[in-house]
Length: 424
Image (tube, rainbow, N blue to C red; front, side, top):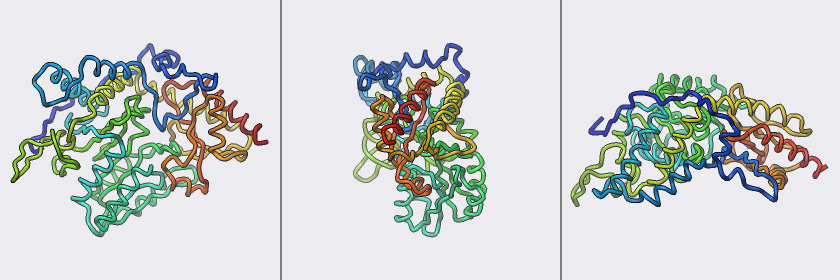
């Protein structure tokens, strides 16, 4: 790496389940779960949109502003040094959590969307040209479609789309047929926010690398729910969002191989991303500073570090097992509701349950569920091509987090029966 600040991550954090873990214990750490909605206990099942925050994350933000607030990397006074250490420590925690090779491979962004745009406009504009091809899947979130469409318009490259079957599985034979020496980028979601499908990232990466293509993984829906090992995935870029990881909004992560990031031009320019500036020439800073222009989201990074600590304490394997059990329970339970149709039955699924009902439009379903205190998402979920694939305008989506339990599912099912009663 050309002058990068490369702090090697020596060992993975402990990911074994905490013996004290129980869903009821976890629920006590989330103050918002005590909320009443129209006199009824909140049942929060919109975790694919954003997760609620544990008290530890809330405290980290509050403590920063009451005792640690200062700008980072720019001051010699006490508060600036404290804030800088906390900010840098958060990067180290996240690098270890994702099993990055070196700390400087972790770039702080505003979220998954900005991370993908950064790669498209920095790496893509530099390396992808007319006649080249970019492959995405048919189940992508809009934030992993539109940036590549824009890049194709800018460069003359061609966008190709991997189809998926009626159950929501990628048709890998079609992916194999698409790959060729013109393929320069494969950008694919790890877990579909609209279907819950878990895609075979290691297989996709190996096949893409075999033809010389780079791979970007949208990990927004996988990072909070299962252990991520970037070395095992072997992808070139990985993007995720803090607010889906029980952390704050407005903070996200881009992982990139250090040698690729080193060769990429800055995405934005300004303060703190330079080594020197004259009117004749600017020399850019080393990684990760080169991609973090201006005052960063300091408290967001610190609080995201607190969220990672919380996830590690709970145990990612434990969280994954709990949510898989809940998904199976919920799948069996909603199938007892007359006229309900589940959309997405992939071989491997995460905790997303999307469905339509014969009795009512998804927006009406969502409204009646809200009257019962059950918070779900109704709409196209920023995945309109998925809706078009199934010929529906929208779905109702329940999505699970570590603090959800079977009582939440029972409340959901009871509310769904009320939908049928209202529209009978």
